[in-house]
Image 1 (cartoon, rainbow, N blue to C red):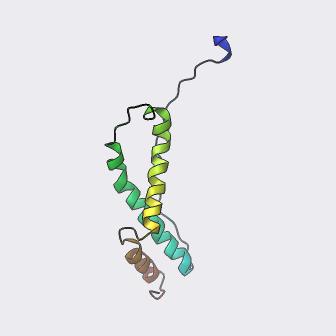
Image 2 (cartoon, rainbow, N blue to C red):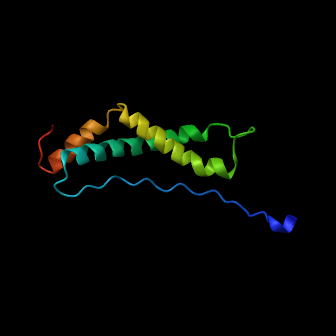
Image 3 (tube, rainbow, N blue to C red):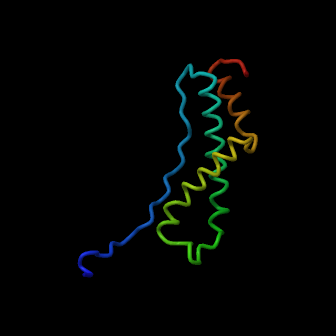
Length: 107
């Protein structure tokens, strides 16, 4: 019976490096605002990762390959929610700089 369900080794998936949002020349104001917010979320995610590394992962529901695979995705989602609800105030100056770079007014 043991041969029917062999145990496969599980290796944690390494988190992929963050990628900055990209815009094309002449992007719409909404696309510029979204790219600035996405950039802020990426920065917040980088700030949160060391904090989550200090959390204990022992216990009945902690640790293992599952946590290693899902934790980076959870951190990204937390960062997106923080950025969507005001964030750290990075998105607005980034958006204004992106608009100036494209020759658009700041509104």
